[in-house]
Structures are given as C-alpha cells and as structure tokens.
Length: 511
Image (cartoon, rainbow, N blue to C red; front, side, top):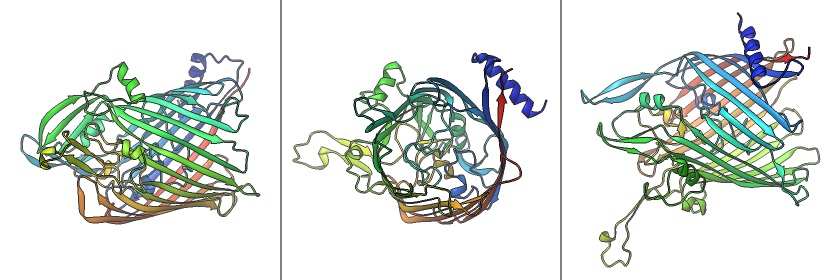
C-alpha cells in the first residue's frame, strides 16, 4: 500500500470518528518534503537552524516529512480541524562531554536527533470565535512577521512544539459596546514537556541541575484598535511559566539534592495568578514574559509601516521596566503586493541590563536597620529550580540568545544571555515563480550575570534563500539556502540546505 493510500484510509477513519458522513465534503491539505543540508562544524549555521520549530539542528541532515492537516475555518459557527506531521531521517552526531561518576573521568557522549519523531499531532474545535486545541501543534509569534523577525521573545517557533491543551479567541474579536474600535485576542494553555530523554542524554552530570518532567503554561492578551483605520495600535502582554516535575542538583559529579515541585490542581491556578509560595521561597514556578506593542500605519497604496517593541520580564523589576533598554525594538515595511521588496525588517536587541546575582546579608553591614537578608540571581531564560526556557535544547523564546543545544560541555542553560546586537531581514520576488529572502545579524555577548566572560564573544550571521515554485507542476517547490556564521560565539561555519516539497489537497466529495 503506497503512502497516498495510507493517508486516504487514515482520513476516512478520521471522518467516521468525527461524525462526518458520506454526504459531507472534506478537504485536507497534505505535504511531502525532502530536506538535505551540509556544512562544516557540529551544527547547521544559525539562520538555517533557527525559527523552524527545531526540526533541523545538525551540520548534516537528510530528512523526510509527511504531513496532512485540516485547518479551522471561520465560515461556520462550529468547525473542527486536525493535523499530523511526521519527520524521519538521519543526522550527524555531536560529541558532548559527560562526567562518569564511577570512574570520575570525563567521557565522550555522542548524540544525534531521533531517526523518526512526531512533530505535530493535534485536534481542535471552534465555536463562534473561541477555539480549543489538544495535542502537539506548532505555534509562532502572534505579533511579529515570522518570515523576517529575529524571533518572538516568548513563543518564537524556534523549538519543537510542546504537548498541551490551549484555548482562546481564534482571532481578534470586537469588544461589546466599542463599535469595533477596540478588539481583544487572548489564549491560555497548559502542557507537559516531552524532552526528558533528550535532557538525560545531553546533560554532563557534573554541575548545575537536571530538571525533568516539567509542566508548561502560556498566556497572552492583546488589545487592538480598529484595524480598518489608517493608523492602528496593538498592545498587550505574554506570560509563560514552568512548574512541576523534579530537579536534581549536582556538584562536582555528585547528586547532592533531589527536589519535587508542586503540581496539584491548586498549583495550576497559582501559575495562572502567581502568589507567594512558602514551598519555593518566592512565587511558585519559573515565570517570564513580555510587554508587547505595535503601531501600524497604512499608506495610500495599502503598504504598511510598523514600529514595535517587546520588553522582557522575569520578575517585578522587569515588569516595572527597570531593566533599562532591554528588549526587542523593530521597524517593518510590508508592501501591498508581491514585488522586488515585499517586506523588510530591522531590529535592535538588548539583554544586558539585568542585575545579575544579588546577595545582601545584614551582618556584612554593621549598624544597618535592615534585618532581613536577600538573595537572587537574574538571568534571562535561566532558573535555579527549573530547566532553562528551551525544548529539546532549542530556545522557546528568541533564538538570538545562544540555545543550550550548542553547549557541547553538557551544561544545560543559556551561557550567553547578556547579549546586544541587531538583525535585518528582507524578502521579495525576482520573477513570477522565484522569491528570495536575506537575513543578517550581528551580536556581542558577555556571558551571564552569574558567569560573566573574561573576554566577550561575537557572531556575524547571514543567509541567502531562494524559493522556486515550479510552474509546470502545481504544488512543487524547491528552496535553497546558503548561510554562514563568523565569530567566537558559534564558531566559523558555512552550510547549505535544499528542500524539495510537494503540497496538495485531498478532496472527499459528496456521493
């Protein structure tokens, strides 16, 4: 039985289970693709690996994708959708370091991605403007241009998706009594990380901590003024959290403490509205998020100019915008029609103003009237109780901060989260069937607040991409990418990636 027949049989079963009879009509999109990449070094260049949901990370990959999905539509009050996306293939290995306890020696730990995995598997329903999704589904920025941005600070689409239950408004909805002048969009989700094996196999078992079995939550609320007006504004916030699971702390190769984190029903509510927790010293869980803003101005020819920012926060000082100029600041141009320059983005990013470790002991200052001590350690995307803000080693937030997967010493954390730099992206068309995209960035890193670097590291990255929609075969596309990294942050790397894909549509018609 060939793959196309297998998919048709599977979809027929899905129709029967969902109550879609033979007299109904169902249209399902499908895609098959082959991706091959190669280059020097251990990993693919920054722009080839980033913001593609964690499917490609190694220097050499040969991957096959097969997926089908039915998207939610807004033409009916009630609607449903589903999706399946499977990847398989072979990838090059990377030698990580691991401390072997019995021999008390460092050993080579060779690792590579799985030969097959389920990237997406979900079902969803919609009633009026509210949706519910259950399963593994890819998400990306709800505010930024995902084809051109460096990446959203909270949910960028850089890492593999997390199994979760998510609900919210399917799009912006008019707020009653505002006559369409104010709209709202919001979502909330709870999920569970599935990367325990990845963490166990990549950790060095020498220092830091190993957090397993963690839970994930995400919340978003955006307000937007009337988008049909020439000038409109979107403002709101995102908040993510890690909680539950178990953490084991290591010191010089020995496990010194194992801590189980709360994960009862009440803890889910406390992650929604955080409050002081005696069990964890401050508030329960690891919280992070961003204040988001975008202003859009539509020109007379319907092209758009946008200015936006995302201000990151991980505690009260960040929420109160006390971390200086930290954040993502961007300008975007979007053409009204496909043209030589269809869109362009320039962004400045700064993560250098967190306070780092804070320690205050009254005994160190005789005569002080302050009787309480204080400890803390500010580090973007890192936490002392839970794992870093990553999934399968790739940052869930911005990839602009070097993800833990690149730490071949087996340390699971963001070692360069005090970073400053800029990013530029441009895309357009050179013919009726050929599009291009160019990405360029520069960054400088000073390590972290806890472990500053003696000498800063830098990186310059660039990618040129071409997409060819084959005119004589509808649905057939070829994408080629050339990219390089230069500097001491990622090392000097060059790589190329080619993807051949075919998109089609299954139609189950009335009998």
